[in-house]
Image 1 (cartoon, rainbow, N blue to C red):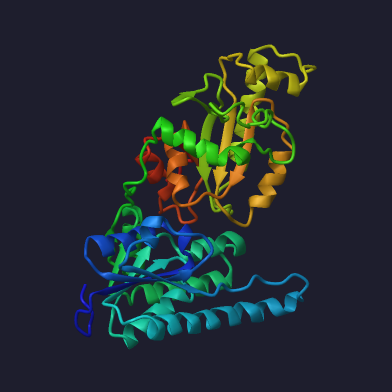
Image 2: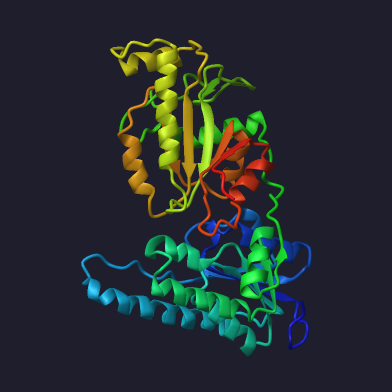
Length: 404
């Protein structure tokens, strides 16, 4: 879509969030730079590093805004409504500064939704001032996310929905992630959107044995470090036994030969933003059920010390039912709550690790795993989790929560 002021050969991708945690918008930027040969400005918050393909592309320029500070503890609750009013005003001013002054005028602004307020307002104004096209990429509905904490009947949710719908209809074009969302936008919002399905980039693929071993070596200390208490993968030193042997939880290097351990744990991966629309209690319950059922099937005596059982497992003794190592990646508000729950489980055959991986190591982890888990339930019931697409790109089977 050409700019209203003549073609300029530029696009601006806008994310009112951490660009390192917005893979779809990173892929938009790559596509615009590679396939359309545009200069691309990304205006977003910092925090996590984007993929190296984005950082190293000469036509992609990242402009990081200052993150809004967290609400300080101890401040009287009577002031919270005032802060909630001031925050979007300041965000609009910062966005307008970047979109109208700091970057060259683009042909098109491509903005991620949600968040809707104040992003859609600021980008619409910027597109009018700079005579640029205004495109919204609908990932979900912002008002449904707000309703998770305030409830659907909240007046704030109603106001938020009005803003989202009103300024969404002002866009020159819309993209969305599913046909169900396309139908909802057309029927109830009066917005004609084009479905653009997520596709895994080329770096999401099955990992080779050598790539797996190198990844496990880099992550070895994190993989062996338990959450609070020892578990079935935390015993052992993990150090090099001699100069020719390099051993991880999953693999061994002897000379130039890499082999997968026969008694290695099954690697199960899940990524999350640790938000209320993903209930990790389901996964913890499943882990407890697996641990108890295997113990019952093998007629294990409850008096057997866990440490003795773990030494047997790691000495090469094979079991019909493997140990399970869950690696959960991501950052978010409920992470500490679930880490505390995990530390109290005391399971014999199941271990958990939480970590944040670089944009380069995350695809390798998916390509090295045995199973992917997705607990995304969607606040609107209309979006699909991109993490599943990435897992499929790595040839990884996925166990996911079902919703309509």
